[in-house]
View 1: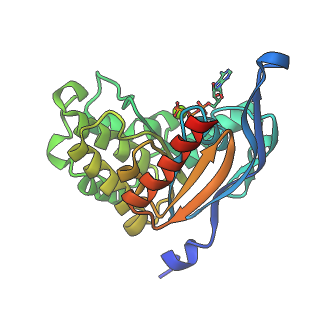
View 2 (view 1 turned 90 degrees about the horizontal axis):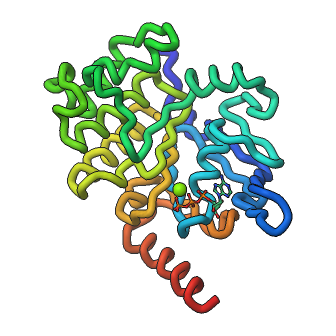
Length: 256
Ligand SMILES: Nc1ncnc2c1ncn2[C@@H]1O[C@H](COP(=O)(O)OP(=O)(O)OP(=O)(O)O)[C@@H](O)[C@H]1O
Ligand SMILES: [Mg+2]
């Protein structure tokens, strides 16, 4: 067997931001969205990013995922420094190494569930690893819905297609920006369960932005952002613990 044990893989870094800053605009209209952020996302770890609206969660995710440029600092995915890449190489890296799950599922309405799942690989001209693909499809419970189009699926099922699409190519890391934001609590719990299973059982690395303490409690750790900086971190979070931490932000917001 050449498979790397999960315990060993857990020590490797899937993505790293070092001294990362992102400034929008200039002069009086300048907004510091990220203020010297350093953070590691380790392999086979599920991280939630939380913080008040405007604290820089989406900006951090977009910069680390190579979807957005940054002002200073560095980002690496695996061993690759994003700053060293040309646009075309960056596009390729996003396609080959990163999976995305967005709040609006972003499925193509004319394609079936199965076709949506394999679309990124079809575009890249890569053949899916069939064994892996079948495992992913079973894990998200979509076996009997593969020939349905998105309009014939419930919201939760559509988001599960989006999760399967992100997992299908076995990316180095999956980023989700409020991936359960549009789902009722039961469908949301299902999708979060699949994400957690993909980390536990498949060794996937997942980073998820969320406002929901219950969603965050599925993660292995939560990092808290305020005003573009990481201000706290919690391991093996409980929903109540996360909620208490969020309340502390609210109290600060009211008094300042
Ligand atoms: N294109 C832009 N131009 C100028 N300022 C921006 C731009 N995008 C984001 N910002 C600012 O950067 C800061 C961080 O925004 P970001 O979208 O990362 O917040 P967030 O934590 O994801 O918030 P939310 O929870 O509301 O999604 C905010 O103050 C926002 O107004
Ligand atoms: Mg956001």
